[in-house]
Image (tube, rainbow, N blue to C red):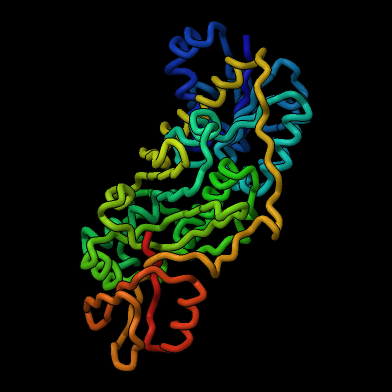
Length: 398
């Protein structure tokens, strides 16, 4: 009998208990062994839940029980989630998690602790919700060098941008609708400011490079300044605006950032709408591989958590090579100023605007979109400085 403990009984935690219970016969048949949810840690009581007899309020009950070998952490936030995870790993318990904040901030340390104690630290659910992407990158693409990763990694922002495009909604109106439907929190900053996407792209970049960037250190721009006119200008150039987490290996250097980008309709990411996520991985042997599906939600995310639990149990007696990362240093970072792509400049007037390479001009609502050939970030800075207040915004093109 394998005993499992769940840390957190919110949306994902309750979903994990549901998946483990509803599909118990199926999972046990595939594992060839039985399992049991022995404890569920939460501050609250759940007297009407079928799991009410498993609820405990003291983490030490789980930590000090030698019968518990697998712990699923779904608490959210850094603390005490990190502290509990570290303690479990040091006690010889494998940990699986959906917590991208902990993975992106403490992943190097926690992977090292898991290796040192002969246990597993898995986090499939931390990126892409129910989309299998982390395990395929570790296993199925292991013979490839990952060149680029481009991802729609946040369902809330994708819903907002889809509403702006398809319903002619302003950012504020689209955000309110996302909040009404429960897609956005009362304080949506982590989503709309790009923080959530930044955490996820550094995890994906670490899988590609073995180096974990600090999510607070990468260039991160959210969607709060996108206007309806910007969205319409993008459409006039046969593009959609999407919040994109992007990572690229440039020689032996690593580049990662998050920003709203124009995605041409020829790119499959342009057709991912609503709360769905999509991740495009460019590998040197297989080429481009696409991962698509529900990026959040109770049961999709719980499905990924349970997949990691199954992995731990199924391989408990196997010699599985542990995942090991290093912290990225300044020497590992590519020069952002050398990054080159096409741009869309938005001007409030075309008077006195310098000629731009390959410029195509569209007008919408009194502003002008100018699509250019590829140029570097350094070139964009020079144009920005020269144009002053005539320039409203600049978008990278994927």
